[in-house]
Length: 524
Image (cartoon, rainbow, N blue to C red):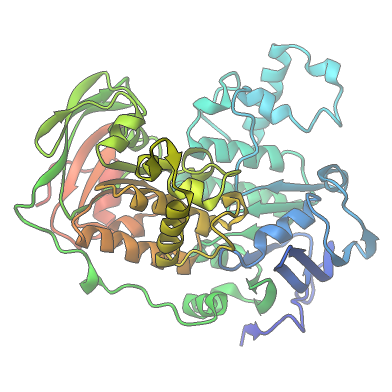
């Protein structure tokens, strides 16, 4: 059998015949106040291999990444590099050892150019005078992107103008270009479409051939199983299992180890039923935004989950932002419940009962330094104002109730939301709109970067919202998710809606063909 349970007592070792261990963690422990993040974790990582690390949100993965990257020190335990003990007091210490990390949350400077971002970190090893001019920086960046086959991104544009997927690829190239001895990838494909995932695998193959040791963290088990040499499973801060032949072990077995229980997918029979003749809640007519959105029309009905299937950069992001009032259309119109509507700002959309669950919860959905309560009531503050005073007790009471209903793991309603795991933060984003009693939900990749158990929780809640009569427009970078949840699917290609699938289920090959612009017409 290729699965070793309860591996806290017997940490996974490098496979026989592999080269010497590069990094070893021995009995590592870490606490945050009353919370234990890591408990006696022992792991070994070898050169020329991709080591998978999986677990639910809050299992301890991010804490391990911080320790291996020099951002935090363990409370106890040892780190050895090639058999010698080391102490990582800062990211600079890790950098000097040849360690590079691609964090789950982007570390790019949004207002700096692509070239300036790629140069960051190289100043310590290259002459600053050499890259003093903008032309020299652009040459440096262009050469680097050519080496790593990163196409279609000009070196002189500010990073904030790039799509989230291109920003993610840029972050990966910056880490890979240093030719690290150890590369840590934390959810590297969460924002990437299928072509970019294929690109990433090709780049990792180069590093493996050069002897780089890669630690790969992802909730996408198919990627983990197909890419990694071995897998370690974390749960509640402990190593609870190891898989030395990922492709030879059923995915269900790995999921069971991650969750500590069986997780059943929702059956197709539980899909939200279409409601013929249901009231149209939101209608868009001929929406146009520059060259990225062209004459887009759609109707979103009461109790419907309308899926949007599209390759990255097909205009879906601009569509969602326009419907939420964050982007001004150049042409077209909107109506709510049959009445003309115009959203000059997101505040207008929120007031009209429209909610947005954005692709990046950290920058577009939450105030990370504020409390759980502040975030939950952010979109419904007027409810808690009376005679000029804020009713904090009522706000905290509502927060506790909603967070409990969503099974959010948190310490206190006054806890800083940035201290929560990624999956629980995503639930807080949803809680904010539930508190506001929103009726129309624009969900853009709502399960990006969350674990399988949290995904099932989110799926259940999305379907409950639809069954309650709420209207949901859903885009996901995972095709399976769109097929799985939707009552109807629209396909976008080059800024247009090119096909509709009204009778579901439908073969994913048909949807993908439409996403690639290979088919046209309607399917009813």
